[in-house]
Image (cartoon, rainbow, N blue to C red; front, side, top):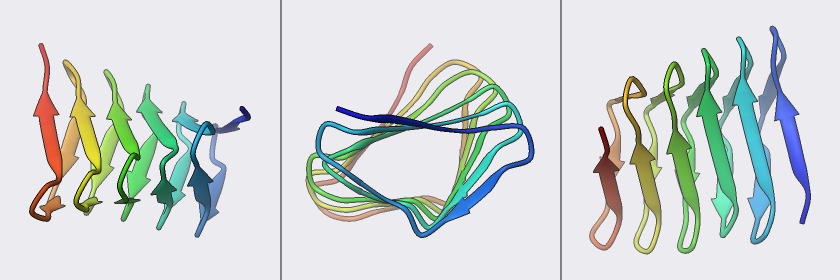
Length: 102
């Protein structure tokens, strides 16, 4: 299991996160067009995840201060939006799930 971090003005694009791996986007970092193939992406504390595709077994987890935008949740994919997290313009396919928590 590997955890990668994007923060403080860093921008990454086109990353694939496979099962057992985690990408943390925080403190002004931006990740665009990430594909979660069973992996996890966490957006927190002004981290921005744009255009994430969540495939089966993947999880996009948006915590306080984090934002998701234009996420695509495919069948078997999940997005959790926690208190003070944001998601804008998501697309959810049949069998995909977005859940909001206090």
